[in-house]
Length: 417
Image (cartoon, rainbow, N blue to C red; front, side, top):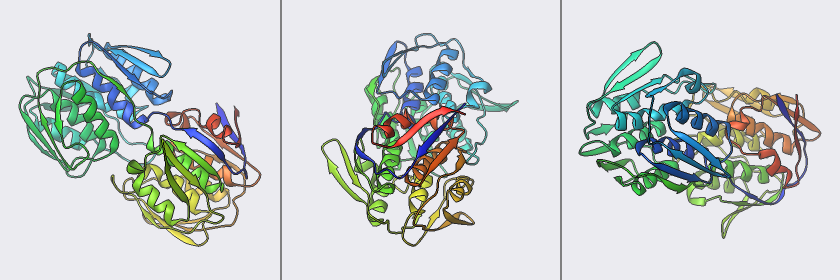
């Protein structure tokens, strides 16, 4: 077990390269199951969730090989159609093997992912879509079992936008017989990349990035060869790090089009953000202006940036409100920010933040992935020393974050507990 130790108060400066997007890599890895032969995915970050996905692919019979930042996957032989509990429980995205296995093998057995620290995330919309395509779904002893003699195109209407559901159904319908329509689809940039990847394999998908996606099923797909898009959540985290420390950073790989909701709110807060050739230049103000945010599905403000934005508002000159509309239990970082001197109170699904002039270092404990990042940011801006424990959450979604921050001037290190 390790912890992160930060001596705060340093204005970050320089440039940082954003790693490949975790939320884009995972569905791409599972999409390789749709084709026999060797696929290659590059710009893959070294993260715990990626290692879990590779282990799951190996369990199913595929072979994986990492060469630098590239992952080669040979899914010629699928020897198992079961995603076991021991793997699925450590990473909810494992449920994304359902669509590819069902489409290629006609049978899949996947452990139910259950909830997580930030709240329940059911897969009922996924299952509703598979049933519309002609699959028979049974739930038994904590597993979803799906079978079909052949998927058929269908008109699928989600009750609400679901990223995982849209990804799972995109992969399944790519090999279904006939045309499919997904209505009320999620619109995230990672879904656009998945659709582009499937099209490069021979799929016929139109409308990704909109609420209505049209898929014309094909009989087979070719192996995948793609480079992963930059991680917009990691980019946003570094942008807020610059703002909170009164720093000046060039965040290479940050894309304003993918970050529009965050960029607009940061501009309202007084942060200077300017596009440069391959990223965004972010300069923090002397004092931040309070801003209210409400999380929602893309293109709204991302729930994965809520904790980091709250840490920034803890130093704003006035009162702000953060409303969480995606997950019901995503304020667990509040009590840890309070330990650092933040003045925050919970009001139902909202947090009211009265900005303070200075945060103070203290021992804190991470409760989930984005809460970990939020506490790192607070520690960078706080006086004295902050120690963040339970950082195994951090390693699920940020590649060498302490090394990247140290390269920007931060006094930060990973040490044994």
